[in-house]
Image (cartoon, rainbow, N blue to C red; front, side, top):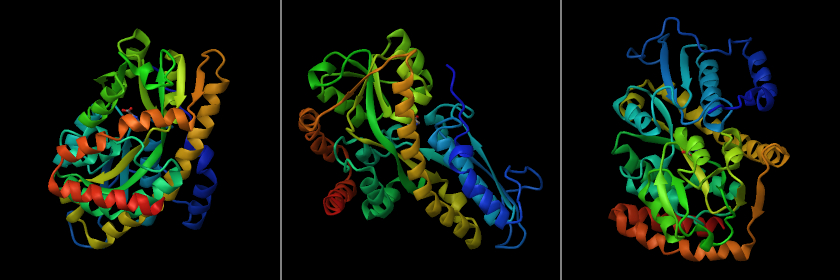
Length: 362
Ligand code: 6CS
């Protein structure tokens, strides 16, 4: 499989970064390995830190570019005392291996998709519920930023598993691709649908009549190409950048869900840091929320156009009408009760509050 390596950063952040560097007297953009340790000394002072930030995506894709920008910002804020290595997907194993590395402290930071932790934190599968969050991505992002249900209650459930979510953010509305048209639930009958490992994601596609198969995305291009699976769901930027459209005939703009990612940190590592260093991390997390929102918006728009323009690999694009979406929504609604039955009492409370927060935002 080959990936197109767009230097997204030079397109989107060049202006902003140049201004910041000028203001900071031209600090080096690249992380230095010199004189690093894990900062096990006193608060403040001249302690230096060197951390690893693992992502589930590759250069030019949202998660990796997020981590690279995060590293640059911490380097600048700390006057070069904090250096971070962002890792592309695959460098340290599968998505699940990466979660384990975060839990054990082998890496300090990770971007985690809740779909890969569904067996561990059942409540995190809330993001698998289709048609739950508003269609408008900006409203959804506002909920992700401010929700107490997610940022306090769900975050505590992850923390029990040694994963501390610092932020939740959307990578955009998901679309379906297939080797045939996907316009009605009947089109999913007998359809081999690739999903992430979450039981709730799988149950959601069973409700449409599909046969879900969980795979790492590293195997997905080949599996679509060889017909091991018939289709998959992902944000449009990811479909184009991973070239899935090249081995699929149809793309359905369904907006059946949005793709949520979490910025996470190993809690023991984080809690052991001096306060001023933790404050720099928290500030960076906050700064990144609007940046990553704009980044995914721009990439999703730009790469939808790239799919349309790719006449060597023609893709039939179907945009579902509200009526067509309604047929899927009806089948997706019972999954909310299914979810309630799978989770703890605290999880049900979290979900009740989240539903209330969503209703208020809408
Ligand atoms: O489909 C997946 O599994 C991958 N999709 C995205 C948008 N990011 C990483 C993830 O592993």
